[in-house]
Image (tube, rainbow over all chains, first blue to last red; front, side, top):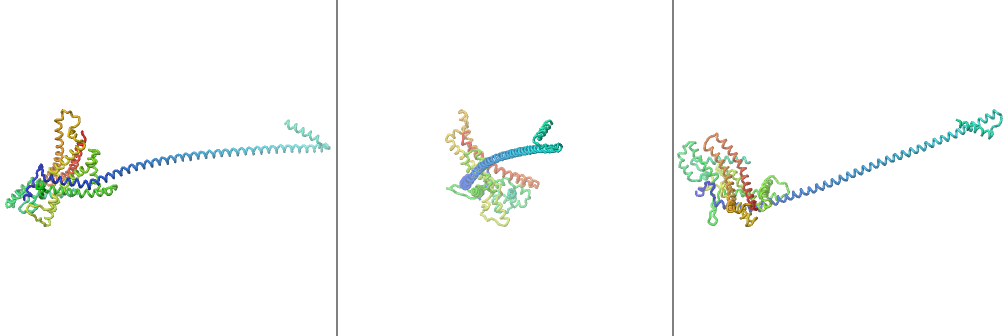
Length: 172
Length: 343
């Protein structure tokens, strides 16, 4: 059993065979993992980081773009609101003006009509009074003639009566 | 899963620790292996006739903590390997190192494949765990110490970290070879071996910690030493030899400080090697000592105490395995960063 006789434990002994195999194994592991594990993993992780970074940048750009767009749209909406308000204001003002104008015209028309009818009434009144006067003169002359038994239907008499009537009227 | 392994490890530690105690003549090949130190075995054999009538207490005295520690922590030569006339024997530690290497390749290469195949995709549970470690080593160890210079050292640092981590961790997994042999015995299968030979499963997975030996840790530390010195020479040129002394030191101090700083270059890897070795050995030893109490005192009352302390130490060892792998790599990165620029 010479192979087993060395099964002893010494914490600080260095076994050249173990050193040799450690070097061999570690080197092998280093080379194989370098080529088949670390290289692909590092490349993949870097690629992913780059992609994430790019995506973040892109999304930031998109966000900015969207914000700008939103701003321009809200500006547009604001200006449209403004415009609409102006239009409404103008329309209201126009309507007000129109109303006022129509009212004024109507009032004027009404005044004209009123005046005219007043005039008409006045004229009719004057005419009626004159007719009444003339009629009353005629009647009174006829009566007077009848009373006096003579024709007073004369133009001269007629004038006298009318003159007297005028006097009467002016004295009133 | 870990707790299952843990309890398995304890059960096997118990059965194995018992092995030297119940040698009563009938020796199975496994026990031959264990009590391979033939002087011990023959003495037990000679005592066999008297020991047969001996009481429990007397057999308890045959418990030898030294032997248990030798069995669990000591290296055993499995096969001679000659290169140009020199013998580089394959031992238990070499075999376990190869187990670690196999696991590294089997786990990391497929992980790399799946990570690189769909780099943009969301990683799975397995790949993201690998990614966490890789990113941690690249950023918190590499970039943190060396800045953008770390890129060319990343493969070395990653390999160093994962190699040490796996070597540390497989020492915590119960010896699968021993389980196989015991299971074989349970089903009546005896390994037919030449006297002194070791069953194949035990050769493959003996459960020994590869980093629990100065030869391994020192080799890794020396590798780090070379990387540190070479990177110093590459980054600073020949002035590196002069620049070992920190800037701003008066010339008069140089004859004292330069040898000290040069010595410091050697103590750094020495500390690396000893730190890893001690950490990977101490936990195992404490567990063996506490479990040994059971066989030493043969009292039922001590069992819960021994086992609970062993479980606690075992859990601590899982943490220490991770921590020491990290510390080794972090310090290496720090020393490389220190050699790149004068400070």
